[in-house]
Image (cartoon, rainbow, N blue to C red; front, side):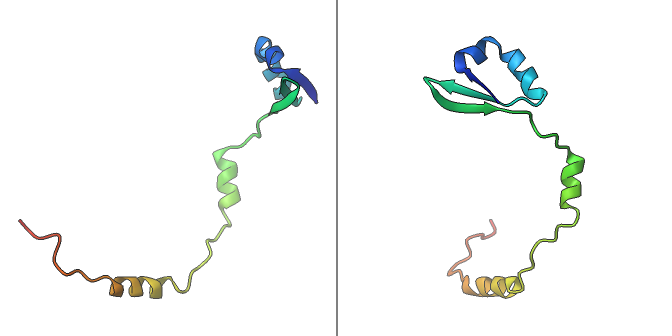
Length: 85
């Protein structure tokens, strides 16, 4: 892990990105306080996302149909707000 000030990083940003790309973690400080960390990005692809979600089955809600019926039954209109012209 490498610690650099914000000023140092701004002057050598391209080199800092190169270091991060090669596995280095850079902690950026301002006025002696840690304010950010630069690390290599995870290599992710649509294929890996598709693969991760392939076996996912959303949880079933056995009460959804009953809830929808109850909601429809609870809605009453005193007048037709969508009258034909």
